[in-house]
Image (tube, helix red, strand yellow):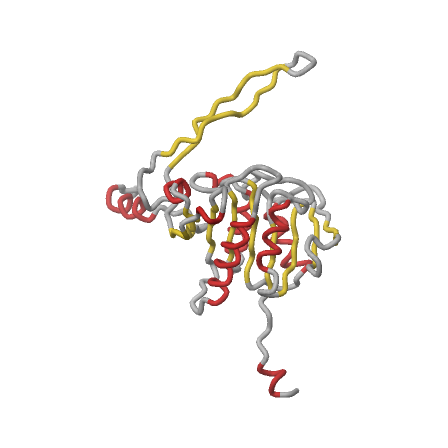
Length: 267
């Protein structure tokens, strides 16, 4: 083996998935944005899986099919399962190793604040982090199938390049990135944020189908209780790309300390 060959650095393996399905424009935009940064493999659901959270498939078979590349030269697979299934299957049956980074998205619609709990996009990213694979979930604040991903592609590449270059890359790193809708020239930059305290004030509309049978349709309003200028909601409202570091450890450590001091469970 020549010295040139032995010292040549291998390309990073980039796994790409989403929750909108393999035919969604967002995943094509994400793949195009990072092309050239490493060896890319796409494994994504064969149909939309929005709002699936961290669901996994149990009790029924999973199908995995190689499909026509969504971007020329990029190995692409569709999976009958959830976004989390896609990450698990890709490691075991497609890559036969852990990728260097997992990218999820670009989601059609916001995944800021409390949305991270319900998001299939972010659950795929968190599953990767659980498996010690650094990951990033990307979302664009535009639900339209004809959304303009120009700004998203610019900031996807910028952020992924920075993370891949990082010499202190945490194997459990997981970033939730949301990108404002509209002209990229209006975006002021990138802001590292905390997850805003907000929730949905939900309501179930009672309706009747064509046969006169009752059904319910979930509606509601997003209410933000967080007035901080450090939150993702504030950043997005003021045309910044929000970047929130998230984690799968849900322990409330401050409350843990208080409980240890205030509660006595001795018999």
